[in-house]
Length: 231
Ligand SMILES: CC(C)(COP(=O)(O)OP(=O)(O)OC[C@H]1O[C@@H](n2cnc3c(N)ncnc32)[C@H](O)[C@@H]1OP(=O)(O)O)[C@@H](O)C(=O)NCCC(=O)NCCS
Image 1 (cartoon, rainbow, N blue to C red):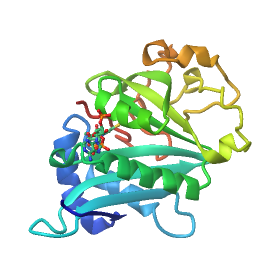
Image 2 (tube, protein in one colour; image 1 turned 90 degrees about the vertical axis):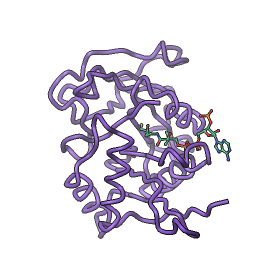
Image 3 (cartoon, rainbow, N blue to C red; image 1 turned 180 degrees about the vertical axis):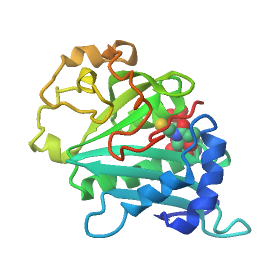
């Protein structure tokens, strides 16, 4: 079986990453500049990003980038910025491995929770996240442009939180109405009965994120953040 290793993403990985990016996210691929900007926050004393690549470690394809993933951590909240696996490596457990890597980074950044957005029609990715305990907490209307596709917002409380940390109320879900300008996702004061999020059809559904920031990520405040390919 092919050996794949996961390591920190560096700038010299970007050509290979961008090739995969365009193949896997044809509608909203990130630009080279956006990856550069993310990587600029991944090193140094104030680093708040963790980006990794998965690469073939042996054989004819040694060094080939077959997946990548990234997480941003701001104010105790981790955000899965991206996760992608080359189609010929799907269902090998690589997506799970990359997500584990991001969750370990969230722990290292002392995040109380991890959030992500995923296209409502991307059931494959949703299954991956559900296996790790992510739960739906809201819908962001028209998040993915130009296709005007809604995003399901999912959340995973971390151990710090369930251990009784600052956000220990695990019944709290996020108020998407709080996202008036697209630059903030969470409002820990606003809670909603968890009965409402027992399944993806019943999640809170708001039209709050209608502005021009829709489809952008909360943390980086730059264009095109957080995408959500389909099956
Ligand atoms: C979503 C994505 C990252 C998942 O990657 P992946 O490598 O296929 O993920 P995994 O292999 O860990 O899990 C996928 C399935 O394979 C199964 N699987 C895992 N290891 C396996 C193995 N060794 N043998 C057989 N099946 C396995 C899993 O149980 C899972 O099954 P399920 O979907 O029925 O629950 C990948 O499909 C992708 O890159 N999609 C395009 C980009 C995208 O949509 N990204 C998410 C944006 S929000």
